[in-house]
Length: 212
Image (cartoon, rainbow, N blue to C red; front, top):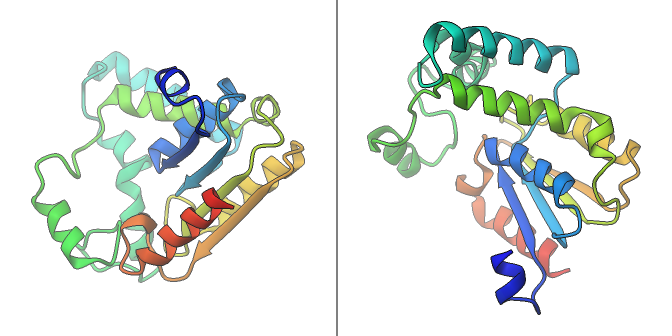
């Protein structure tokens, strides 16, 4: 509302990454007339049975640990499992920061007091709710079919199943009748393509998409 009121002459673009990608996809459904273009980075789409099970587990865990509690089980099924998946594929050394190859950003991530903290139970519940919502075909169909959306991810990103879930997500949107869907998988890049060593290419692609 603030942007629409104060910058009426400008188009409103949306970019969402990782957990923010689920929120961005939800915004494109709930406020379908507000955005002119969108970039969705490092996302995934999950089967309804899986998201339903995750939501139920979150509900049960909250009974015992409270909304602010930390659950190793939820962590092992969520964010905590991502570096493990990379290690199993030989894409990550033990103890290495999984989000990017950039050593400076890895160093910042390790030393920052606000990076790498475990999600609390309510945070996982919120994320599971968003993933469940944006993964359902009936909800995706509610969005504007004419908005250009570009999906991006790294080929070494475990959240997007190493890029495979981007194709699944693109297929979902195309089957729901979206006209302008595109995607790019960046070779050898990890989860945070906007913080990767070769991020200038990603920024250029994003800028070209918004300017086109």
